[in-house]
Image (spheres, rainbow, N blue to C red):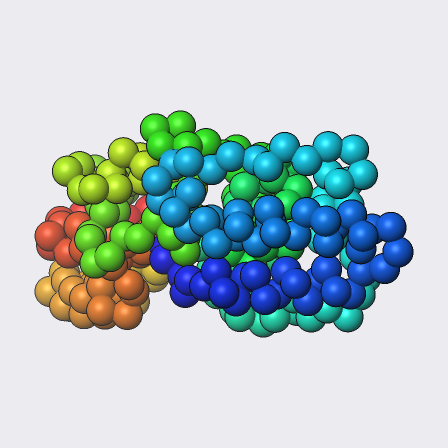
Length: 268
C-alpha cells in the first residue's frame, strides 16, 4: 500500500501506438480499426479508477484475442516496455504489500476482462508473487466493490493509515495491524488490507524478523539499564529509517513505549 509515480495518459497512448505499429498483417488491421476506442479508454483510465467507472470495451473474437495477445508479443517494442517497467522497480518492495521484492508484472484491471489494456502502462504494475498470483489474481471492481487500491491513482497523500497494536506479555510481544479510521481512503484501504491478508503477513514478519533483532540486543547486555538503553536506541533508529505506513515503522512506533518492560522481562 504505497503510492508510486503516475504514468500520464499521453505517455500511455504513445506507448500503445508504438506497440500497434510494431504488429503486422491482419492483426495490425484489426487493431488499427479499434485504435481510437482504445486511446479514448487510455485517456479516461485515471478517472475510471478514481471515480469507479471502469468498464470493459467488450471486444470479442479476433479483436479481443489480438488485444489480449499483445502483451505476449516478442517484438522489440514489447520487450522494451517490460524491461523499462522492471527497471523502474528494480530493488523495490511490492507497492501492494510493502513486504516482498517485486517479481511479477500485474494487470491491475485483468486483461481477461480488459484485453484493450493488455499493454497499458497505466494498468501494468510490478508486484510480488504472493500479491499477484496468490491473493489479487483477477480481482477488480468499481467504487465500493473495488477491493485493491491502485498504487498510482488512489492517492494516499501524507496520511498515516497503518497503525499497530503492540502488547508485551511474559517474554513475548503480541502484535496486530489495522487501518486508521476516518481517512478518505480508509474504506478502500481496509478492503485492500483484508484482501491481501496484510495483518497476518505483517504480524508474521514482525514476529519472525523484528522480535529476534531485539532478543539479540537483550542477550548482548548484562544489566537491565544497559538493555533498556541499547533497545531504546535501536527502536528509535528503526522509527527514523523506516517510512511511515511501513510495517516496521508502525511496529516500532508502538514498541517504544514498552521498551522498559521488554528490557526487564526479556524475550524468548
